[in-house]
Length: 319
Image 1: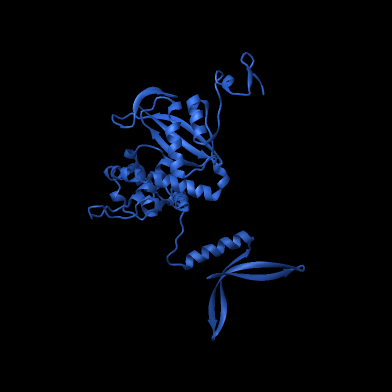
Image 2: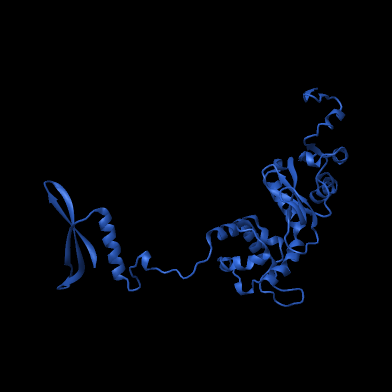
């Protein structure tokens, strides 16, 4: 069956009248047999009738409505697939072990690379502890996206991989620095350095100490994080600082590490940091290391700068 147009002319104007017809043979000649006469149709009605006829002619097709469809389960896909694609664009999988064999020769079913990818997507979309990562994983389509057997994703499995992922930290930082610099060398002329703190509620954390946090008061398991960001806003180096006491005591050791790790030449990078890192010793140290820097000074530090006369009562400065 098909929709059969039958043109007519009336008062010099052409019209299309439609019928439902089927092909037939009359004495060996092909003809059309009219089954139903419909009359005039709008273009939309023509399209709808043809769609219905197409369904009728297909033995595998059927007609239903959204109300007739029952969803028994669903898995999160679109945002997870987007993050997976973003990871692949940056080529991050190659920074982690891709073998699915352990050092003792036994299979571990899922590579460190895929576990790292899964945990990164998890932390980007729904940041939480690794303990809740398993239930989150089972609510997504990541097993299909990563081509893995989801039954092997467990709390023990994730915990075993955290040390392996941590071993890749320096390689990740070097890769980010190199990749970002290749994309925009000028974005590393000015680099921003800052600290923040956070805390754990658990019982054990070797890097944590008790102390006052900036936003959450006293905490028994406080940690301090440092971060370097280029002028385009991309982070490329970070550290958890042990035995933290004050912002001013962090910059010396890290500045040596940055020069060695990223092969930074004298005067190549301008560090920007807030007054929390400012001390006379720190500034002199950075100058000795051939770093340029931009920062703010405390009121009592300004008069010590040669060539600047300061009226401390009004903060008027004359050079």
